[in-house]
Image 1 (tube, rainbow, N blue to C red):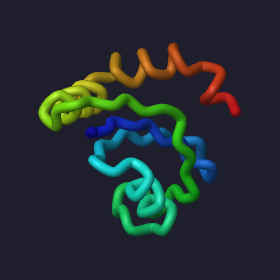
Image 2 (image 1 turned 90 degrees about the horizontal axis):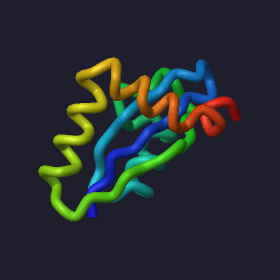
Image 3 (image 1 turned 30 degrees about the vertical axis):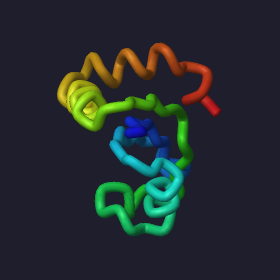
Length: 85
């Protein structure tokens, strides 16, 4: 499986969308500071993820979410309660 996931910084409440074939290992790397893009916003928590059978589908979804403000807005709308915690 391939995963597209949404993280929230516990430090400054910023959001990060990513892709990984091993979701658990990737989140550990994020929190250890081994991922450059989230190193300065640690610790992070997993808010949600989507699983895909094919890598290309997951990468397409990640790209769409990152490219368009509508992608973030859509996620924020659907996850309103989860993001408030």
